[in-house]
Every structure is written in C-alpha cells, then in structure tokens.
Length: 414
Ligand code: PMP
Image 1 (cartoon, rainbow, N blue to C red):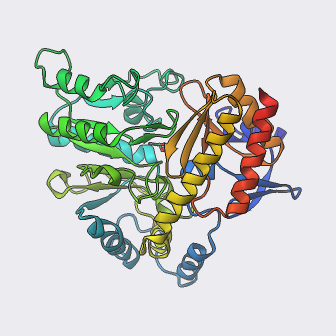
Image 2: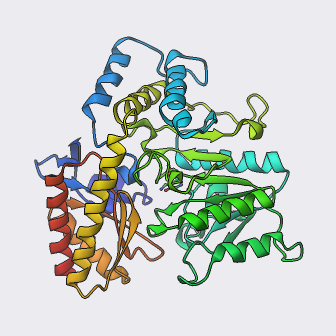
C-alpha cells in the first residue's frame, strides 16, 4: 500500500476504502494476493452486472482476440460493431418497441453524458439543462455541472453553469409532487428559469443515495419535457443493463426518452464502453463534430454482444433479477426491523440502499464489513447510505454470506 501512497495521486479513492491487494476475481468473489476472499457487493460501481471475469463472455472475447480481428479501429466500420448494433436492436430495442441510433462516445459514463448534453444544446439552441437534487452524472465539466454533490462541485475552479437543479421525486417529502412544481416553473414565462435544452434524469439515483422515482413522477417529467420542447434524457449509466430488473430502468414507466445514456455494465466484462441511444430526429451531428480516439472499442463491443445473447434473449434472467432483488430487499427490511425499523430500505431490482441516516454508522459498518470479507460502498449526500449492488448473477449462498457479514457489521457499529 505504501507504494501506492508514494506513486499514485492523492485522488485515489477505492484503494483507501478497501486497502488490500486484489489480484484475482471471479463472479462475486475477489481474491487478494495473500489468498483472502472477499464477497463483492460493489461490482465495479455497477460495471460488473454479470460478475467478474464472466466465463461465457470471456470465451467470446478470447475467440475474438485470437482471431486477430480489429480491436481498435476508431469509429471505422467493423463486423463486431455491426453485430453489436444488430443484436442490440433485435434483442433489446425492437422487443420494447424502441427505435434508436447508436452514438459511440468516449468510454466513460461522463463522456457519454457530455455528448448527450452537447447534442441537446445543439438541437435546441438552448443552454439550460434541468437536472435534479442529488443527481450524479459524472465529474467532467459539463457532467459535473449537472451533478448535485457539493464535495465534487467544489473541486472545480471552473464555473459550473448552464444547469438548473430541481427537486427530485420525494425531495420535499412524500406529499409534495415536485413534478407539478417543475411544470409550473418551466411553463411560466416569467419564472426566471430559462427554457431548457433538456431534462436529464436518473430513474433511481445511484450515487445520490438510491432514491427511487415513482412511475407517475417520471411520466410527468417526460410530459413536462415534451411540453417545453426540451429533450428528455435518461441517464441509465448505473441503473441500466438490468440493474433494476428490466434492461432499461425506465421500462416500468413506459418512458420514451429522446436520448438514453448507457455505460458501466454495457460491455458486460468491465471493459470501458459507452453509447448514447438517440432518436433519429435529434441526431443533428455533423460528421466528426463530436469525435475522439476511443469510441466503440471492438473488444468491448464483442463482450457486449455476448452479454446480450447470453442474458437478454429470454425473459428468465430479468425475472431472476427481480426475484433475487425482492429477497435482498426483504432481508434488508428484516435487518432494519430488528433494530426498531430505524433504517430506511430503498431501491428497485438489485439496486438497494440501506439508509443509516448517520454517516458514522454507515462508515463503521462498511469498514467493519470489509474486515470480515465484504466489499460494500456508501452513497448519499453525506455517505450515509450503504449501497447494495451485487452482481446480477450472484448465487444465493454468496448473497446470504454477504448479508450475514453486513448484519454482523451493522450490529457492531451501532
Ligand atoms: N451517470 C451516472 C448515473 C453514474 O452513476 C455515473 C458513475 N457513477 C456516471 C454518470 C459517470 O460515469 P463515469 O464514472 O464512468 O464517468
């Protein structure tokens, strides 16, 4: 660890929360150099929905590599890219009555969010973006401007402008419909809020504390966007690719976003890959207007195609995620009940949050859990929520073991 302190920038984060040498990983298990075993409930911050080193996806990748097919080709046409688009179209989009073009952006979630905001501004000729309290969209400048967290915002000396924050669903308590408030402000020509280029929303806020928006609220927000001629953008970077049970986190609400942002688990293997799904009528780019060296890496695309073929052709995987997610939720609720119901359990599918209200409790629990062999992260405005993002492929025995460690760690931290 000392070598990392000496050589790696202070900015490093996860190696501080989980200070050990990880050398191998498979499924939901990470192994250290000295042979210790950790259960992983963090899953690469949502980038490993199908687990570490998924064997079937790896087979597709190694076949591709050993055939000397093109790995890096800028955004040239390759069979791997065509196969990805065709598979995504038939396995995901058409089955859901959706039609989108693919824009391969730079490989990170932030890269894709930047591209989405830039496109919305170009299409509408407007500057303002509506984002939400506790929203997280990445830390590069335009994405950071749409991210609520003050700790992250203050790291930027550049001005973070062009975004108006509105209260997310439930922000003002259960009895205030913030969508109505937003509608009033955006339709009122004298509210002081500039007409937006886009409304940018997560259907479940991941980093913001696993805050879940209701179906009706999301539908109202989409309707407001339509009524003010703004693009409706869903950031599905963390909650997409099956995390909430369905492939897209907004399917349950029947939304039809103008742009969908996907990243993290899209490649299925933890390789960096992001896309924007954009409606044809908003595809206003000139050729090369938003470009970059690493867009649509072919190896990542091969893995992404394999993941779609393996997990998304049938409905059984999705149903399994919902079922395991329900078990996880019930187990967390039971743990809360044992402690006088003093913890809120929130989430959808296999994205769950256990709100400790006090940051010290969450911090001590996560730290103790790590000591006992469980990797679990915190989120929320003051890092007071324990975030459960197990691999969607986790087996029930490993899940139970992880939850037992969590429960014991919580008990020791109160
Ligand atoms: N949007 C959401 C919803 C995210 O959760 C994240 C990452 N946590 C991002 C964007 C940014 O992705 P990246 O860290 O890959 O830039």
